[in-house]
Image 1: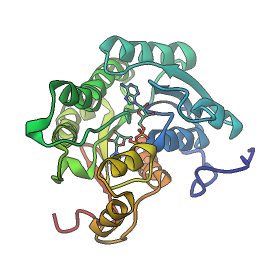
Image 2 (image 1 turned 120 degrees about the horizontal axis):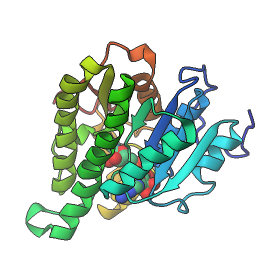
Image 3 (image 1 turned 90 degrees about the vertical axis):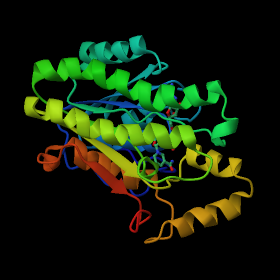
Length: 272
Ligand SMILES: NC(=O)c1ccc[n+]([C@@H]2O[C@H](COP(=O)([O-])OP(=O)(O)OC[C@H]3O[C@@H](n4cnc5c(N)ncnc54)[C@H](O)[C@@H]3O)[C@@H](O)[C@H]2O)c1
């Protein structure tokens, strides 16, 4: 395994082969949490189809990062708010690697605004990727997994799917919807061998998380406010700390876990 000169994921350990022989699709894979998940899944032996609307924002692109680790990955550029792009994603994975065992739809976004000042465009830009895009992806992949009679879907909700926060109506609504979609899908598909779970992270140090903090005014004050909101650990998570939870839900070690919204929030929601 090659060690990169500056490793952006210092908490990521060598893989133990937990996903050996498996094929994973990860969306939002070129940045933040999705990038760490795609890389960790590959380290654990999965062949990864990494999907993102933007393959240029961060260098090296995720497939090159994985290949530098000695792993196997293909990159697909596409806007996952469109149902046909989600179908192309499934078709690409099956054509390239023969099957799909793990699907992690991580791509998402948020816009800060008061509800009465939120434009149609802002509302739809969030719902279209966080909720509709996730659903389109799951619908496409489920058709394959149902035939296969196996699979693990790891959705990206948020601690803000269970908590409210200031100026975030579309985001909180979309993530709350994913929390309950997780439960609903688990009832229909777990009997067919497909486990469906969600991640509910608290604040994470990612390009989007940092952009979002800047939108709130004084960056340092906002970061301190976020740290203090995390009642247990009083710090913001690294993407790898979320990726390890995504690994647990993807692999056989969580074989009895389905319909679960796994909170990884340093204690943010302890008294919610
Ligand atoms: N950062 C946090 O604090 C935090 C906390 C809880 C949950 N989350 C969730 O984790 C996920 C990833 O967040 P992040 O902070 O890593 O963000 P990020 O912006 O760093 O990464 C998101 C990626 O999704 C991609 N993407 C966005 N819209 C897309 C589209 N239409 N089609 C395809 N790709 C698209 C972006 O290009 C980007 O590469 C999101 O769903 C977010 O809501 C983040």
